[in-house]
Image (cartoon, rainbow, N blue to C red):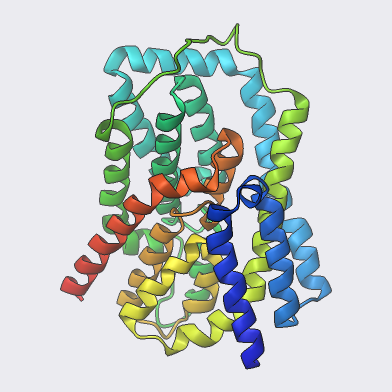
Length: 348
């Protein structure tokens, strides 16, 4: 790859990281902006081909379809969900209920998939009637929990699927529960920690005017289809962006030392972390290296909206902007990355 191409891809990455926080129009049209950047990265890398175009058209279908179908189902069952949440809240209180639900979603995401867990999260937040600051904070911390928990099995999210597939042969012979054995003791404290931050760290505010299922108008068909469409464009953009930047990642990652690889994982805040996992995790890596890089990718994926599928779904459903997400997510992400880096350094 030429020097010009490397510089151009670095500039594209910088624009992806900076413009959503500095230009309001970019923030409001984040999906379109990422699609443009993804197409630019593909052009610079010279990777345009029918296979990638087909992948960009097909890959978002299942996610956007799940968002659309769930929207109709949740709209039809709003009263039942409301009643279930109200009963739980009456028994153990709002904060304890929220803590339990976040921990549960975190671990169940490895079976339900991160997509379904994120959709359930949005419905729960909607019915709790939280004010906007509380809603944003709860959504972001729960997305951290979902992103971490979904990696425990190959069906939870794309990253875990790719890693398991890459490590099926010797020397790791990864099976269905290989990642659970590797990650469970590490991600469990983080899931509990973010659930506690969401539920107990700050007071949970409610909307100034209480509403009920009967007097709150349901989402119209137009709103549901537009929401699913935004998710579709978002995922297609990440396909192009990840593929377009993959040549740089493929050359850079093998040359890095352990601690450098760990902090490179921060780039998954703006890229799909599955792409970096595909480029960076190889069978020749030790178990400790896989653990270190994997944890970095999982935590960093929660820092910005494009980093993980649950973030994208939650931001679209709850109308969370890039700056709002970053303000709440960066401190937690940096703290988790620092704590885990120190722990890994001490143990390995």
